[in-house]
Amino acid sequence: MRSSNPVFSRRGFSRDNGSAGFGPQQSQAGGPAVGTTPYPTGNPYAEGTANPYGTNPYATQDTRFGAPQQVRGDVMTIDDVVSRTAITLGTVVVTAIASWLLLPVDPANINKSYGIAIGAALVAFVLSLVQSFKRRPSPALILGYAAFEGVFLGVISAAVSTYIADGVVTQAVLGTMAVFAGVLIAYKMRWIRVTRRFYGFVMAAAMGFVLLMAVNLLFSLFGGGDGLGFRSGGLGIVFGIIGIILGACFLALDFKQVEDGITYGAPREESWLAAFGLTMTLVWIYLEALRLLSILQGDD
Image (cartoon, rainbow, N blue to C red):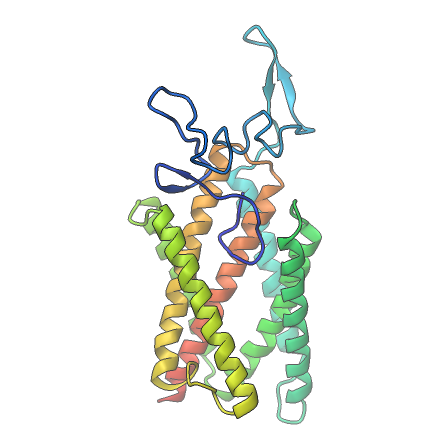
């Protein structure tokens, strides 16, 4: 199963009649349409050479219908995804609260706290990259990412709450939850359909967004201030809204991949990748919401 987050998954993203996912491609004769998907037999979790998990150590033999049939056990369920996501997000929340309480953001110590936050963010980024190049999910790497990301979020949130507005963090959390609930409802009601075109548009838009933010950061480092102005004033508000919309689109991709993984029998360990992708997306949305609300509060 490939995560919708572009930074950590290298597995194929197959399409089923234009919809992104793991679904098998069927020809009019009923057989698989070879060549229309990165997996020759369609389902990447089916038994056979096309399945990267074809030698599942948890598989058992089912002889109830005559010839032995391979029955894959230990497959991913929605409960697995929910529990792993709760663990990963819980790690982010716990470390964020701890860093908020333990790392002071008063003027006398603010530089030290910012240094720790930036260091934690860099470590989290490296861990996410390491996971992206691993063929199988590593719970230790994923939880390590969550812990260091939580340290970064805790310091940033404490600083924003102290120097900009006391209630802005609560508003950002509620906003993130609202986006999550709204996208989930829209996805379940099929108001959002994850197609090949949708996937391509989101990935292209995300790459452009990240590149613009990187250029803005470089200009701010060498020229001072906010660089090209993408993170303050009117442009900051516009890009904050765009960032939240992109996060909502990534949530739709995450939901689609979770659905396909469950439908086509992904191994249970894949639920860690699902949790990782959802956590990264929610962190993205929270940061964009926090930045947007900070700009709006600062303009009051």
